[in-house]
Image (cartoon, rainbow, N blue to C red; front, side):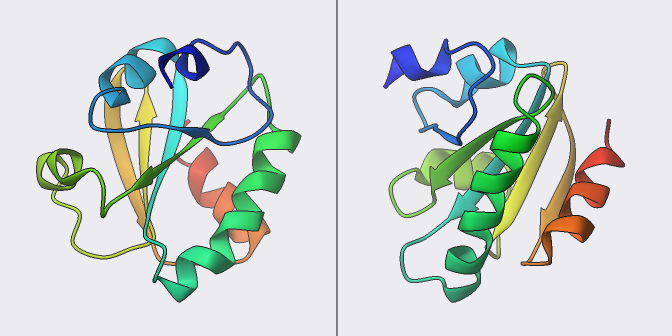
Amino acid sequence: MAEEILVTNPDHPITVTDGTIKEAVEAYPFLVIDCWAEWCGPCKMIGPILESLAKKHAGEIVFAKLDVEKNPQTVATYSIRSIPNLLVFKNGNKVGDIVGAMPEEKLIERIRSFA
C-alpha cells in the first residue's frame, strides 16, 4: 500500500488508510480524499465521478479513497460525521470538506474553490 502513496501523478484514486494518510497529505500538494463506506449509496454514485476526475486532472489534483469502516482513527481525527465526505488538502493542510454527492461539473468547481 505504501508504494502507491509514492506514485507520481496517479490517474486513478489511490487508497489511503489510518497508517498512510499522513504520508499522502505530505506527498501531494493538492489532495482530495473520498471518505466512503461500502453500504453508502451516494458513495457508490460519486466513485465513478472521482475516477473520471482523477484521469482528467492527473498531475494537478490527486484523488484518494479512505474506507471509514476500516479507518476509525482518521474518522475521529477529522470528525467525519456523514459520507461521502471529501477532505481537501493543500500543501499539507486541510483546507476544506465537501459533503454529499453531486454532478461532476459541480464537484470539480467546489474542489477548485480550495485551490
